[in-house]
Every structure is written in C-alpha cells, then in structure tokens.
Length: 89
Picture 1 (cartoon, helix red, strand yellow):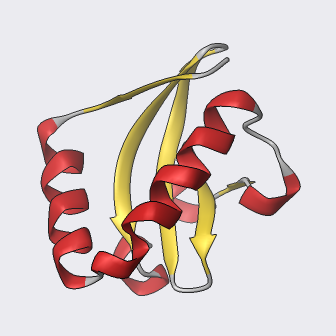
Picture 2: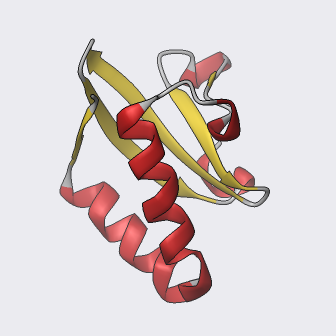
C-alpha cells in the first residue's frame, strides 16, 4: 500500500484544477485510490519523465490530466503537480 503525501503547493494546484474542471474530481480520486493499492496498474500508465524532470514520474488520470509525483521510499509517494500535459511538463 502506497501512502500519499503532498505539500501546500500541490494542494493549491489541485484545488485550482478542480475549480476549472469539476467533472474530473471523481476521476482523480478514483485513480489515486488505484495508485495507493497498485502504483503500476496498467490504467495509470505510470511512467518516468525525462530531461529536467527525470527524477519524477507521472500517472495519467485522463487524456488531458496528469499527476506528477516522486517516490520518497518504497511505500510513500510525494504528489508534486496536477494539470494538463502542457501545464505539468
């Protein structure tokens, strides 16, 4: 089981994203629930990023929504950013 952590910056970004896209809130919750149980579930498309973000990973919520995170240790993930492909990369 993966424990999720985040900071105030992620919290603000999430609130802002949900305010703009209220229809995505349940989908985000569902994908994060799946992530905590099985972080490499195929429907999450968990992948390592490249370039300046090479220390980070991302999961796909929907075609136009990503959550960027990094594993702090084997059982903890730090959520860093949420938004469209262009916004988070």
